[in-house]
Amino acid sequence: MTFSLVARDPLTGAFGMVVTSSSPAVAARCVHLRQGVGGAASQNITDPGLGGQLLDLLESGTPADEAMAKLVAGTPDINYRQLGLVDVHGRTASFSGSGTLGAHRTVEGDGAVAAGNLLSSLDVVDAIMDAYSSATGAFEARLLAGLAAGRDAGGEEGPQHSAGLVVVDQAAWPVTDLRVDWDDEDPIAALGRLWELWEPQKMDYYIRAIAPETAPSYGVPGDL
Image 1 (cartoon, rainbow, N blue to C red):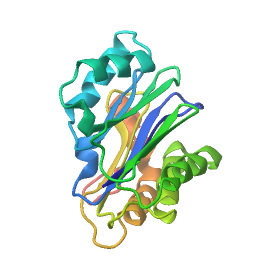
Image 2: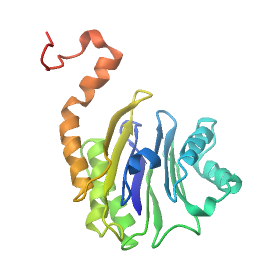
Image 3: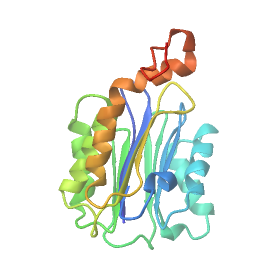
Image 4: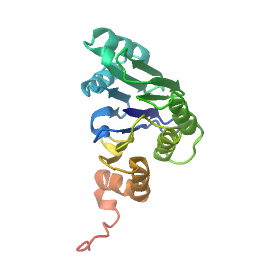
């Protein structure tokens, strides 16, 4: 039903996540990022509250593996959940409960966790990690490369219908937050087109937030 990648950018310290699913609006439920703290994926039979709980544990100084172990030990119905976690030092942890749907797998890499359930093949998750790790360019582009590689390796058993790309960097709010909440054809391709639109404008919107007096023109009718 879902495959994803959550990571810390070793170049900038930013946290990001990409995710896709057969269900609608997957990014609204599964993506959890906090600048200077970490990133968490909460998926499968999803409890969105678990992402925030994992980030709270990281923010208190608990390393990723200990945070995951503590959450798993103290959470009812945890066997229905699939989780990935990356902390501020790039340490990782993951969990797939016994109730995780279909073929499922998590792979922990260098500051990154790829995870999936109801997969067409367990190789999908390895393809995500391999493509992300070898990609170049902007962090968002590398994350998208991983997600597209998962699709191209077979994806999930059914068609993907929604996808999301979120990055936090330098600010408490996401500097990139792009979502395709429903697409009958290829939500990952649609997400890639949104990134192509957003990339050249990304820093303009950041500057408008932190230094509006130096912000570039909006380029819209009525803007003097």
